[in-house]
Amino acid sequence: MDKITISVYRHNPEIETKGRFVDYEVPVEEGMVVLDAMKYIERHIDPSMSIRWNCMAGKCGSCSAEINHKPSLMCKTRIDSFRGKKVTVSPMGAFPLVKDLVTDVSENWDILRRIPPFTPKKGIEKPWRMSQIDIERSKEFKKCIECFLCQDVCHVIREHKSGYVGPRHVVKAASLDMHPLDSLNRSEFLNSEGGLGFCNITKCCQSVCPEEIRITDNAIIPEKERAVNAFYDPIAIIIRRSRKEGERK
Image 1 (cartoon, one colour):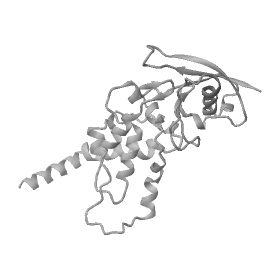
Image 2 (tube, rainbow, N blue to C red; image 1 turned 30 degrees about the horizontal axis):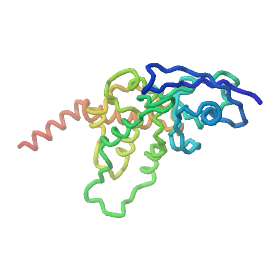
Image 3 (cartoon, rainbow, N blue to C red; image 1 turned 180 degrees about the horizontal axis):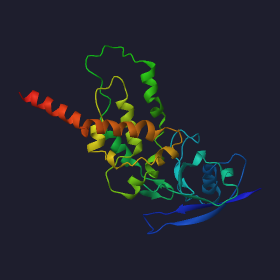
């Protein structure tokens, strides 16, 4: 039976100051994915290794890691795609390490709670009715499995303390802003609190999304355009000022 060498990052911050990569030889079976190899190591070689996984179907987002330095789902990365090359598996570098391949992503839930929730327009009669074209507009955003690979690959989050909320949360805000019955404009939140201006549209988040959501094209760029129109367009600024003056009178 063929074997492959898997180099896994091992580190327990509670008892160690530094981490290290440990090599393991794993037998290869047809159709095997990286998560299969991790489970084999845990069960047959070193049960002390910590990994996080759940569905094994690429829909829970639990098994996120960096495979050969690329943020990926372990359950969707096939071993045969490496063609006998050495494989390295490390935790997501954008989040605090818990142990080995497990990271603390709880800050994302805190950010999601800060995003203004769906707020329907006043006076809308029930049952609510929407056209199909409006439903399709934000439908792809609902596919997000919250694996946070887009957050991990974002160099603004990894390298700068800018306060940028990250691509996953811009997607959430965009899905609400594009709802035809919503009454809010979350570009104000993204501009003032979410650090949206720090995103320089490299599309790296879009390239690692396992659901192939067009994060940059369909969420980040539209939200940036909304922010510019609302807060930096000189005509819009004049209109807002005139309205405020009218309200004072």
